[in-house]
Length: 258
Image (tube, rainbow, N blue to C red; front, side):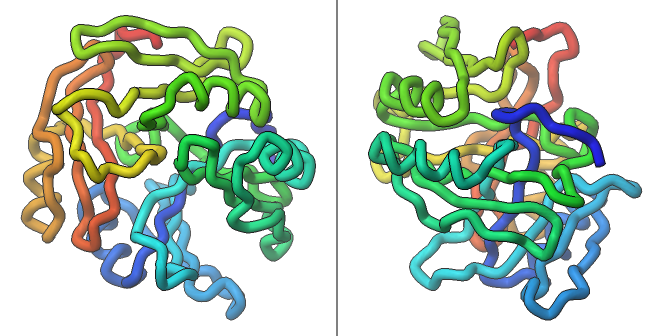
């Protein structure tokens, strides 16, 4: 089993009201194959693979009040200790640490700014087997109305330090462990943002052609929230699947260093 540095993103999964439809949509969009968990208690939880590598997963919505969404999980050496830290600084524990069929131990939280994320304590599965390649997760980004609160929260919970940068569109924060970038943060601030957009973690998947992938998503019943746009990090677009789950695609600039 590969080891994952605590605090680094290590897995993403989708909660969907129609797992079979999600398998078809993302399978055609990214060239993923599906491996449905054999255990009945897994409720059809499906691992997506690019080639022979696990890249993501989809499972059923477990709460009728929850909206379809992608969740980013960060590695932890001790899910219970992480849950205690979250609770101790006024975050919310949505799901207390739970063993997952020997694969690992997971928990779900809401940070103090309102965004949902998870942690994964590896067992027999460490998480994603590739990242940064076409068809795999390449970046995770927090969108929030309280960036200063988020900096304090994730420093306490995951040991991140933060580094602010300035783009034409405003401030952007890089979260780091040591000298390694773990994730980013964009403030929801200004007239360009929907008034009802909730704080959330956005998942970016690497693709070879952003424009063609966005067109395919629309053909498959998805939608485009932000059309293809050039940025220092690469050309990107924000999409939603047919059930409304938001995700982003990007063709990364190989010369960009966060």
